[in-house]
Image 1 (cartoon, rainbow, N blue to C red):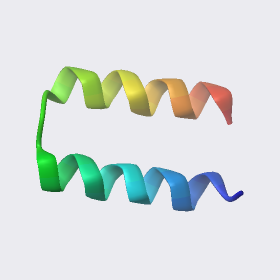
Image 2 (image 1 turned 90 degrees about the vertical axis):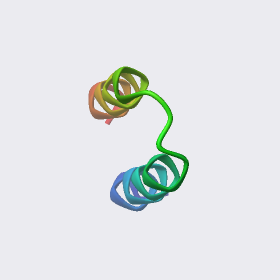
Image 3 (image 1 turned 30 degrees about the vertical axis):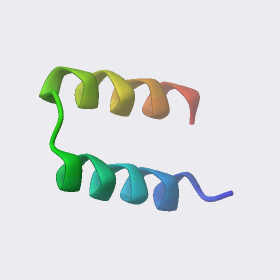
Length: 35
């Protein structure tokens, strides 16, 4: 399970949905930390 692919997919989903930027930052930070 490549982390880069997961991040890309998440980014695409976030961009498509465009919910809250804070949530995105927190999610990205969590993924980066869990790497």
